[in-house]
Image 1 (tube, helix red, strand yellow):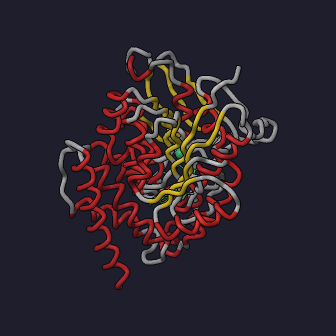
Image 2 (cartoon, helix red, strand yellow):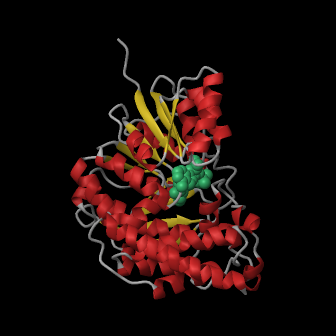
Amino acid sequence: MTVQRESICILGATGSIGTNTLDVIRRHPERYRVFALTANQNIDLLFKQCVEFEPEYAVLTSSEHAESLQIRLAEHNVSSKVLVGDEQLAWVASHDHVDTVMAAIVGAAGLLPTLAAVKAAKKVLLANKEALVMSGAIFMQAVKESGATLLPIDSEHNAIFQCLPEHFVARGIQSCGIHNIVLTGSGGPFLTKPLAEFSVISPDEACAHPNWTMGRKISVDSATMMNKGLELIEACWLFDVQPQQIEVVLHPQSIIHSMVRYQDGSVLAQMGNPDMRTPIAHALAFPERISAGVEPLDFMQISQLTFEQPSYERYPCLKLAKEAMEQGGNTPARLNAANEVAVAAFLDEKINFDQIAVVIQQTLTETVYAEVIDLDSVLDADKQARDRAQHIVDGFAAN
Ligand code: NAD
Ligand code: MG
């Protein structure tokens, strides 16, 4: 008897999460086959991935890149069909032949294809936290309505998910005897750097994370701890809890990936080496377990596990994100958009590292709060904040 292999679509296949996902899939050819791979610009890597995994479809954002990839694939007798544009992205993510979608595009660009996968009731492995931060209520409503399975890839949320009882969201935090959730974060590369030096931090310094290798945007977010702020918002939506029920704790070694504190005094933690293949393999195989290629954790090598409280003076973005979630409505979407613009400007050397938080704060003050009633209101808030943040960045860059 032949067993049907699980058919996977990877949105953002050429990124850090995308390549780690393919690495796990490569180890389990009997379980998984690749139906579609998508990317923005990196056609060299997408070409190699198509040669190796022979997906039915490859999707790119520009027709120029798509044409050139299609020609190269034909020259190498690879039958993958190359598609282009947002609609095709959503089309592959919701295709009948797809079981599972890895949502690993970075930023707001991932929202529509990820939502398409959710609405088509796929098993959705969510790495693209910005999509959920922007559209929380609408996204979770779509999950409920379609019956999609949503599994967290972010290592902290995957850890929390592993420490929670079954059917947690349906049962609720109280009836499960949970006191709170402890969201750990390393503090990034500038945990001990004097604040006076923050204005001269270079993009490469900000992207050199001590424990994780990641895309540049999330690396900067980790350095400002906006990443932890976005994760706090992400956790509120995923686990249906309030910001006050989440405690953010600095844990520089990144061995404990997050914890759940129960009312009886127990604290459950998920540990492992900092390697995204663990949460990816966990979510891919859930509820089974498969090998991920990750080194086993060697306790004799860990000299210490330490914890401290994050300072809002060092990490103002963390405070902005927490307040945005407390305010609700379209504020998390405006926060996310302003952050994307500010981080891009920093990576482009248009603004200083310590101006990222200033751009976000000013954008939030100068744009309008509204309730989120539908997807359009999310996209409006995103556009409004993006335009305003760009204006603020241009002002900084001109000085
Ligand atoms: P990355 O920059 O390495 O990769 C991003 C991927 O998205 C690439 O394949 C790129 O081609 C694609 N992409 C970028 N812009 C696009 C656009 N406009 N349209 C279509 N595709 C586009 O990023 P990453 O580090 O892999 O992160 C991906 C997502 O996963 C982010 O939301 C990030 O927050 C989240 N995440 C990453 C990690 C990690 O360890 N890297 C951990 C947790 C969560
Ligand atoms: Mg994370």
